[in-house]
Image (cartoon, rainbow, N blue to C red; front, side, top):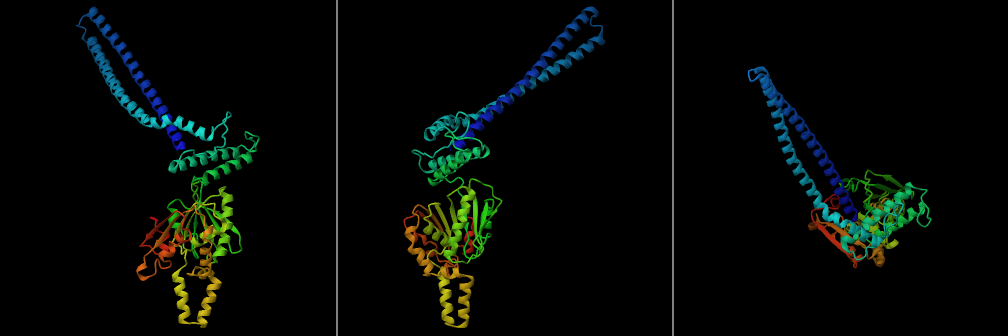
Length: 443
């Protein structure tokens, strides 16, 4: 990526500067030692000359003076020898340090060497990033012949560069764009250009929405999401139809993690889909982003499927389901059938049916072959064929004919029937029950 190469380039220049300053300090230190040796050698020469004059004048009989000269000469010679050895040792060490430092810099050379070519290539594709006044300009996505991971990384860099444009005009509200645009207009243009890059495959800034199941809460994904730093935002759809937002501890702007919560987690599919649309609208406005991906557990996967079919779902590309009974729940159907067989028409049966309708209308929607399930299946042609799907099914109780205790594998993999033309991958986790699916970090 261009951004990574720029970072490596900066690192190389920083290391070069550091190595140069270090070498300069070492050379200065060695020069100081050499200067000291020269001073001592001058003192030694003077002492030797004075000793000779003294001996010429008084002869070797003047032993006290002779001993004094000998002691001083010996002391100076010892210090000179010590300093010369120190200079030799430090020179060798400095040479080794320099070789090591510049060897590291040399390892960065291939990347730094291609940096100018890369920037030239980016300029050809997108135009220069800075104008003559060093003001960042919009970088329009134009990946050229890039494909696969290379294309995605390029688009991510485009998103990051346009974020710099947005932030510049946000902090320079009096600035004017190259065609006289206001700062506010340039910010909107930057956001629009980022959205273009995301629609083409870039994912920087694209939130992951976590959707709970029947009567779930913000604790459904707590263990899983804490592994990644917690949620960025938590949106709640209240019984009165209002939506509130609470900021979480996660401040990762590159990959925000968002939780959708229903105060009444047992509303019908249609009612939850309405709340889903309202929360999504507010999230898009808050994050200035019209794209998102979804991880859904249980009934959350059905509601998300309904959202996709109702809205056309051009706003997200990846959909993960965990134990979602896309084709309905056999367990719900068996329970209702058993209830009716054991006490058909009884007061107990009517009370239970009334309780289900009053407190958990979604239970009826979840039943296999229910009207709500059939309606989702009938609308399958509205499912966006570009969405990539990853589905998990649990099988801890499959031998007892209960799947993950709530959903059978065929229903958990039901998107293969609803969206047969989509790119889909399925995983069967034989040791997980229904709740264990969203606790399994391997998933």
